[in-house]
Image 1 (cartoon, helix red, strand yellow):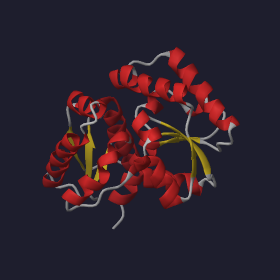
Image 2 (cartoon, helix red, strand yellow; image 1 turned 90 degrees about the horizontal axis):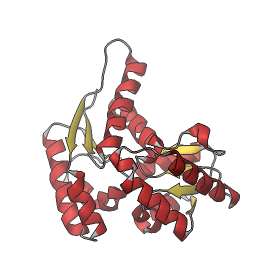
Image 3 (cartoon, rainbow, N blue to C red; image 1 turned 135 degrees about the vertical axis):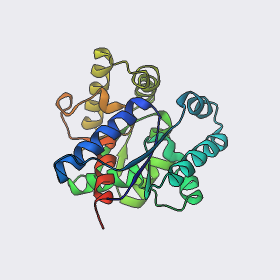
Image 4 (cartoon, one colour; image 1 turned 120 degrees about the horizontal axis):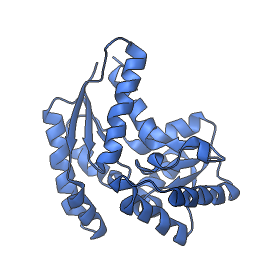
Length: 231
């Protein structure tokens, strides 16, 4: 079994889900007392969040690269960045390490395409929804048509992530707001919606939506197990 490298803590609320999902999947496949071989480094998200919102991405990249190198030195065979937003810096991180990086958008796109979908809604932080590093990768590398919410809805989605979900706060009012936004994306032709922030699946479950939801946390975790158990 390969050692899965996790660069987490952004936020730790979703990193807990990565750890749980990966270990549950290894146990399901191998049985007995098997669990995953994991090297985890968890950052202080307060530092990262301040750099994000101050548009100080070069400094954030330095922190991410240092953390990724720590995971590599711990013996990881490949790396997952346990957040969608910080894949903005995925190329810089990948260039700085000597182990492969399993990109969350590529794993998600493969799952969407295998489900037969081509037009997809995207929820996430404003960085993920509005910038090219994520949407552009889905569109240019995987030929997906990506829909995002309107400006007011994007603001609401972003604020709920940082002000509630990253703090472990789950509010029914926010769940209802998200489901209304999902319904609007479906009305525009979305065949499903990407939960493109690793905390959103803490709030919105499949039973809350009228369309398929693509949970990036689960997808990324399962792909990690696929890789760890492949010779």
